[in-house]
Image (tube, rainbow, N blue to C red):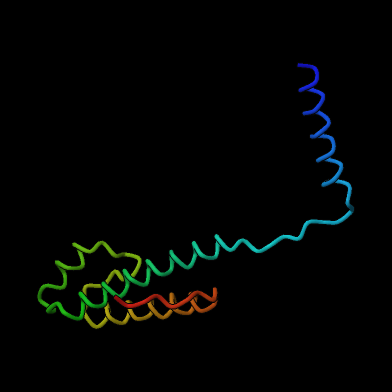
Length: 111
């Protein structure tokens, strides 16, 4: 039992001395996972915006108010006017594409 404790303490001490006393600072790599997560979030928002634009373009102006209340998309527009909804949707899409390009994300495949 004492031998196991001694070996564990010795191994821990040696590991600490070998890694902590080199005098070199560890290089900090950029967090790739955070960038990938941001890119994935932007891609999801782009898909939602594209779906919204497709639905608005393919819906008659008569049914647009019902569509607007059913979609629950206050982040894109708050209007019930078809041209205004398309304008707001295209602005949102342009802003997302700009942010997407700023982060250096790959363009998503259109499926």
